[in-house]
Image (cartoon, rainbow, N blue to C red; front, top):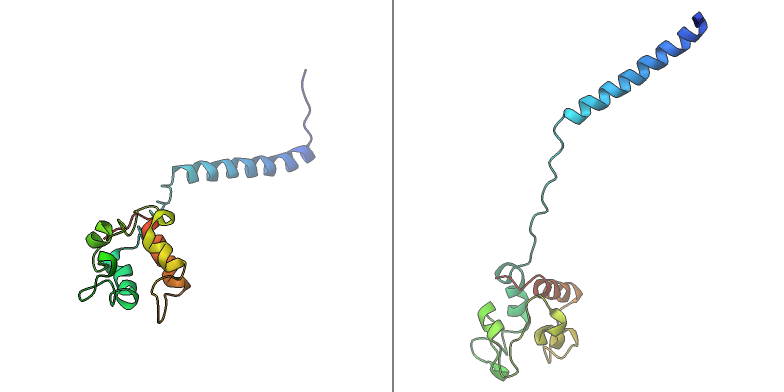
Amino acid sequence: MLMRISIKTVRVALPVGFLVLFILMISACLQMLPRPVMLRQVDRSLGFARDIEEIMARFCFDCHGVKNREAGLDLRTLQSILSGGESGPAIVPGHPEQSMLFHMVDDRHMPPEGKRPGAYQLRRLRQWIASGAHP
């Protein structure tokens, strides 16, 4: 049983066949190319010395620094912040919601007078504590 193929069928089928073959070849070649290396997200964790100390110096050191240490709290270094004062540690790394320092500043209790940290500075403080309070 021979099948007759008309010239018209060949004229249509041949280009379509080549197109399909071409697409398959391109796809195979693309599979062999090295995949783009996804850049690792740069660790943009906030650090005390780089990002937080300036906020503390501006708003906290007058009462919790060299000359004064109200409530026994020194906020000049990460170690002293973790050691805390009379009420215990000022922060709980990884947990801003459990950190007295964040609550006192966020609830506008501190600083008690004068200019207060703005929304951006509060976000930075929260992020720093949430990310683990790195030095």
